[in-house]
Image 1 (cartoon, protein in one colour):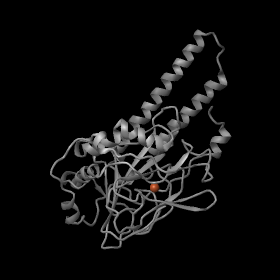
Image 2 (cartoon, protein in one colour; image 1 turned 60 degrees about the vertical axis):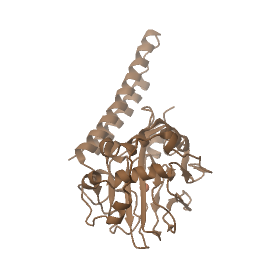
Image 3 (tube, protein in one colour; image 1 turned 135 degrees about the vertical axis):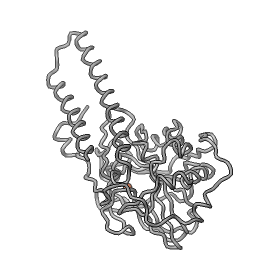
Length: 344
Ligand SMILES: [Fe+2]
């Protein structure tokens, strides 16, 4: 049953603060050649879940209740312990796409939060990565850990790759577009723009110290999680849990692939926003993808409501005015939320 207006107000989603970067900006510093050369591989191949998926369920999934946030968000699950997700071969294929000429020429971004990102590679430039995150097998595993059926939030966020390079002292950047920090090397507490996130480690973690994601519970306690090896991942309800990325020390690189998710069901609330990604995306593409899926949700809701109304009439049940008004108010809220996101 849908919550009342008072409950909705009480559980309003956290406000997200985006980067100061207003428009897509290319990084000031090029990536080192050794990183690009090191990602080259002999053979590209299509994603095959039998070969490339190496899922082992996490030892523990912390619940929203356990961290004092029961009732918030779209799932009772808050955050997982790190778990194996992709094979090393899969990570090599992804890295080959990320550091390909075409991607580096067209998909690099920088913001006030992250000096070097690769985003929005798309299906043509990165078919392996795109197919992996859209594969029913991967989505089933991510959904299992999340405790709710999920789909990738937007094509543009398949995926966001945060790249930190250093000489033994690597600053771990935050997830794209969220932390209100003046300096890239700083990290700040923030909420994500999309309900769930899967952070996959695609670096060799040998010698790496730190680099965890820290979460703040409702009581103020801090929890830390991090994928301990290449191909491991953490799933977190980042839209509703305040978190920050901690600095990593050691190792030459720290590269994480961040994929954002929204609920698969059009009947669940979708509080995705564009605050965190507007300044690090090609705006017409971003607006198109957002509008497309939001209208699909609305379409499904209207179809279902129409069927509901037709059944009521056939069964000669009386028209339920309060219920009809409540439904309309919810959809108006959904459209109002879109108006908050789409502007020039
Ligand atoms: Fe985040």
